[in-house]
Image (cartoon, rainbow, N blue to C red; front, side, top):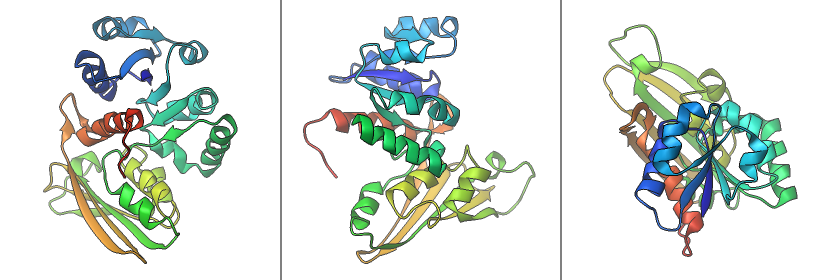
Length: 258
């Protein structure tokens, strides 16, 4: 599988190291779309990647799939064009909280027979949720996200503070950089208007902790994920980066699990 990457930050470096430098079997990043070629020349040389600044040239390069690891704005700008020519994977899933944009992308994917892959990011259990929702029988999905207080609020606090309670749709609007997980959870389950989100600023934790509860005709499930940061960037979840690599391996594999 030949991969075209959008973005050149911490997650991009992680993927380049794992796939190109460590030689993940049958997968290689061959192209990268960046804003400034000169800035990333050393990266291109180190990992044997060709840089592009024009979207059409990038899409016409020898790639099988486009992987976005940039930001929500890149998804909004690039995805409608990219999905007409290639399968696409995005990590900035918050862009799909815009229901009109999601509908546009869905229609384009269907029209051009391409897929949009959404890695699970910093959480898990999406396979269970999708299975439970196969007959539309999930009744409740809730997410409680607990993060170090200083990453969410400016004031110094001694005890935890609930800074948001409401729908996933409103959570992503107020905290676009902090609650992407609520959108992938919503898309896998009962939607952004029905998925309940609570965000807690906690001075006593050092990691991001996501607690998910699902209830429906199947029964119930509760699980918690405590995320270590990506070694190259403490602001990025290690699991989020690994979820992209894991999803690519599953796409490229012959045995599908889940």
